[in-house]
Image (tube, rainbow, N blue to C red):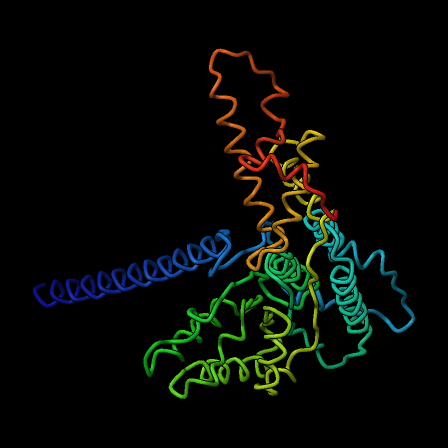
Length: 368
């Protein structure tokens, strides 16, 4: 009996140990699943514009492999109206038109890229495989002309067409990629590349990566890492370089390897006065304000003068001036606390809200 009791006790202990191991394994698996789910949830968050990540605010879509795997028999036919609907790209192109005034050559180039990828996608379904198109780009032009907005739409477009797995836009500048001391640049650059993988890395003022006059600068190290990744991982990442055209031309002249990896150049021209007025009108409509007739004339006079300033930033300057106009509008209304103000009063911007302290500008002849 004693031997039997010991045997049963040993079996019970072994069984208990097995149960404990299985429980720990299950907890570990659950923990990993929870961590992965948390990572996916964080990945869907939208980040503010700047040196950060902008993720497209849309429901999850099928993976690139799922969207491109459906093959067609040789005698089948396709229509590109159906292909556009299946990819959902009209939504992106319509949003681009709604977001940006003018920029007809830029919008045409985006449409051409979309057309190329639609045809490439249809060819793949018939088994007509070809090397993946080079999608690295360069956006040139003055600030405030919509480069970041177009980059975000391009990332969304490439994701919908199956050429990017995630479609996020990661915004970076020199300080995000280049370290101050030896050994810092490679880790910083690789961290940004890891964040952008599956989407678009948008490098603003990219020419600051290279400083020919400083032999101790580490920007060249970042450039070499970028070149390697742009070549070896071009099926996983699109790089867009941005900045003033003349400076980007100098940058490419000093870095021919980078120039040879850029397939598409989009030039963003400075806006005309009429386009800037249209932009102001659109911005105000989005916030339920509007310019009175006299205020619109005042705005055109004001913006015409501002366009001559060296730091004028197109749509950004328009946005900043409208913010100041709203500030003056609010102060004007609240300065008369006992007056009855109408709904229209709360929406209407007047000339004094635009030209505070500069009413004499309206008397000056302007070339509009």
